[in-house]
Image 1 (cartoon, one colour):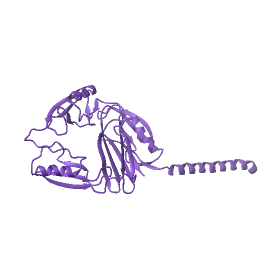
Image 2 (tube, rainbow, N blue to C red; image 1 turned 180 degrees about the horizontal axis):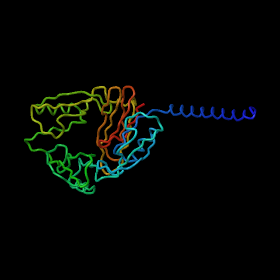
Image 3 (cartoon, helix red, strand yellow; image 1 turned 90 degrees about the vertical axis):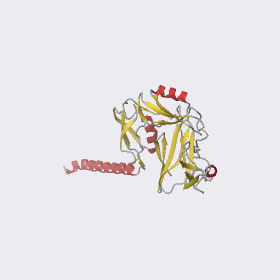
Image 4 (spheres, helix red, strand yellow; image 1 turned 45 degrees about the vertical axis):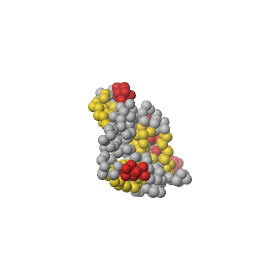
Length: 315
């Protein structure tokens, strides 16, 4: 009897050993996968979410839909795991998608003539609200200087978009601050000296800009100012600009196609915290190619019209 059971016992033992080996191999493979951070998929389409997840080795599963007036139809309203959570490659991100509501995104109208603006809003199901006129050194007469709500904000269908339109150059007795962002500091100093104003300068490092380039200013361009006031400038620190020798880490992004320019912002997170290294309105299909020198482990975030569309590690 024992001899008859021998082969069966051996078969069972071999099966148990095979199962344990398989379980160990699967567990080892899972734990050897790279750890990545889950990107923020909120307000993105399923297709855009797939484009973000694929390079990270993550999958996507739509687990449901719901009505949500905050988001246009097809936009993701909820995700599991949440944005920023570290997970291993191969993880499935489950999302809930909006069935719509009568909501739309405000288009970027800055720089457009008034006649084009009205048509653009009507085509989207929006209307022109209150119109304010201001003098401007930067924009031609009857060109949009700003909108309320701003570009990329969510608004109800048939809602009103208030406009600030340029009245052209100011009257002789009105002094406006020029827009010095992107200019060299010497130009701003010459202007303030000629108008009996003082300058306050703060330095920051931005490798994508040239040495001495103005990164920000207060008051902003086209703001009324008086002799004796102070113009505050944030200037790129000497030695912070790229030398063009190929050092640093490259951040490349191609702007999506569309009808309007996009506000592209790039920030870097490293051991020093998060800092903005690029912000500019870019034409559809244009390419952003910058280099940074982060400290330690770092990652880059790319925003389009205020919405984060991608987060990638810098290696």
